[in-house]
Image (tube, rainbow, N blue to C red):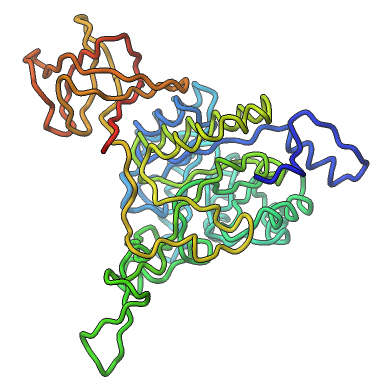
Length: 435
């Protein structure tokens, strides 16, 4: 971690340069932690485990058509829950719209107006215009899909009425700093700090459409960047040549996942207003693990730089307890080299399995949950608590809804009641370490 130029929270500027003064003002303002949610349960988990804001997709016009996404009813409940906790919810409508999409988008924004999200995330200028016309009272954030790589672009969107612009993933920290110096102080910068990296210019991918007819820019990505590729020569059909000298072929577009947990000071000093986590198709365990770890890292840094530095091994350990594809710092410190790619597989590393979330307690000392993966009586599992603690417990007893004893719970989504031998709380998450 580069330490020489780190400005600690509360530090005053030592010169009169206006850009320097503005930079220090951003350091003093704690950045927002923005977490993704695929459904109502995950949204509530994100809020409980430390998110300042959550971004979600509706059933149309977002870039995760394969995600479960939110019905209007669930979105309304999620927004009300987040607002009751003093948190925000942003709704994605960031497709590249075609002519046939426009009338539907107008109706969609009208419906969303009634449930009062805090902002829309858009990329298409036509969609932006519709949002300004239909819901002028709701903030608009400009998606990374709009390829926001220079301060003139940021100024343009500011003049149009945008509240925030999401930086392109291919920007370095130095480029973000330069943008911050050259845009209005009340224009916010949002930046991805964790999660999967698209191998395309700011996510504008044509591979999915080309190979499968499913348009990534309209929400139907098939993730061809994770596939295995070989070279072929046109006069030798059926003869496959590996791009790398490896018997399993290669995954030439398969980036490691972004992780900036070790560089919170540098992100803060760059003037980033919102730290964004990728993953609108992830589980509650993933969301809870990432949200809780980044929450602690940000709070520790604002409490004490030394405390933050001391806890870096803990952050790295905790952030690895959800699925990931190894880690990289992406473009933040310059153009990535060959070490940022995974060449021999496209699988996640999975150190822990998600068991479920405590949703209630009956009068017999048993805790209620919906089972996500199988576990058994006498098995040792870990309880993950919102306050940062991890507890090791042994399963004492499992019953079904009718009170019948069970040796294990083999059926996903089955409602069960469990005795863990200790007092737990609603919203505690259960996970099991894998060998």
